[in-house]
Structures are given as C-alpha cells and as structure tokens.
Length: 370
Image (cartoon, rainbow, N blue to C red; front, side, top):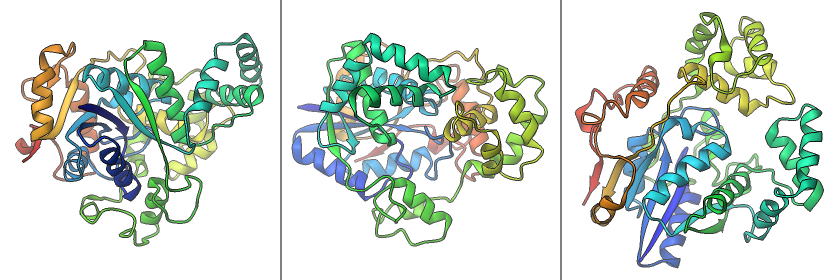
C-alpha cells in the first residue's frame, strides 16, 4: 500500500485539484491519500475563501482519506518555510510519495537547479544580484536562470523546487511525483486555476463549470482587504513595526509613511513595495502584523487532525506509536499547544460568522466520514 501526501491550499478546491486526486487513485489503486492543507490563511498572504473545516469536508467527499491542518506560521510563510513545515509533518505520517502539480512534464529541471545551487558560481552570482537590491527569491531565480537557462516563474514550480530540496536535504524516504497542471497559471481567462477563479468571484462571474458541484456553497468572497481597518489600527498603534516577522529597518518606515495615504490594501501594498520587497512579500508582512506574528514567536510542531474516513482512521491508529510529535484530535485537551492557532483563528472569525472553532463544539473534533 502506498501512502501519498499532498500539500495544498485549495483556495478554492477546483476541477484541476479533483483531476489530480483522481489521477493519484488511477496510478495508485491501493493507497492512502493524506492532504496537509492551509487553514484559514494562505501562503500568498491572504484569507482563505473556504474555511479549513469545510475544506476538510470537501476533501473527504472526494477520495481523500486523511486531512491534516498545516500550522498557520508555516502556511503563511515563504516557499522554503512552507515546505519545511509541511514535509516535516508528512514525514512523521510516514508518507512514501509526495504528489504535486507543476508546469513541467518531469522533474529533471528541478534536480539540475538543486545541483546548481550548491556551486560557487551560483553563490557568487546570488551575492551580486542581492547587492543590486533584488529580493532573495528574485536573486536566486535570476542566478539559476543565467547559469542553467531554466526559468522558474510560477508558484507551483517554485514550491516544487522547495519540496524536492527539502526532501533531499533531510534525506526523507519520500519519492517526489509531479502531475502536470491542466491549466495555464498566467492565463487571465477563467480556467481550472484558483487564481482565475478568485478573480472571477470578485467580478461576479459564474464559476460553476470549474469547481465540483458541492464546493460552491462553501465559498465566501472574503479577502485580506476586509481586515484593512484592523491592519491600519495595528500599524498606527505600534511604536516599532520591526518586532514583526520579516520586517527590517527601512520597510517599517515606508509602511508607517503610506498607511495614512491608503484607502485599501492594494493601495498600501503598491505604495510600499520595492525591488527587494515584492507585492506578495508585503502582503504577507501585513498579514503577520494583523495576526501579531513577531520575530520571537515560538513554534510548536504537532499533527492536527481535521478529518478522516474509515481508511484514514485505521491508518492513523496503525502508526500512532511511531509518531514523534503530538497528535491532536481536539482543542479542549491541547489548549497550550494550540494557543497561537486560537488567537489567529479568533481574528479570522471577526469577519466570518459561525466558524469560531473554539466556541462551536462541533468544530472541536475531526470530521469523520463513514
């Protein structure tokens, strides 16, 4: 039996994701599929338009056996930290195969890039680009492109490189397997792409052809901009923004300078961003401020169960004694470990009704599908 891991945001879950899961079932008929999924916040620094409990229910209804929550700190960070947290948990769950979507047919380019990153030529070129004011990811990708003629320009390929590099560096006994995406990430037309679907929702365009039928009812058209007044308050009331994760001297003064000139999130980000601090990085920083994520944050590693079917339940019981980090099935018995999640999800619930998991008893335990 194969144990397949998937790392995902599912913001929202669409037909391309369903294709990937069905393809796994086709390739590995006797398998357990484990998904570790972002909770109520995303790696792109935004609010999830489907809350984590509804994501779990959707996945269990579409052939996933076990759904795990990716802790918020890992889930809203850069590709390397995102990958590090997700793979550490999936390795504890004894997966043997990691499946992910890419724009490429095979993994050869990724291994070439990883090999290149170990060379002195790469390190020298990287330093040159950093000295020119490029952000670290941009400097890295430009260096790799110049040395290998391989260009990474989509989130899926960037994450794929991080996944494989994390597996290689930690010598995890996990086989990477890519499934080529069925839609163009850069396409402005509505496709099986979470980005285009979110854009369509903003413009009141029908998305029913692009998501499974049961998904529509769970979607809420929410974004980080809905929390802009809260972000503005946090910025104006803070004496020192450099206490927050990923904020260094210089960018803090730009945020302070432009916050009073901005009427919404996009205006603020576009005024603040620089060559080194990209749009997405600034957006994540504003999310860190909203969620009060500081540089001295202490991260607890654990496995938080969001849901399972009978097959998933039997599997988690079979490996329970081999897991080296806490396995959490409810909040009530793990308040200390989940203190940070309590805070960030309470903030999330300020703009979302009926989903405060720490008040509603039915959201205290994993969803179980028979």
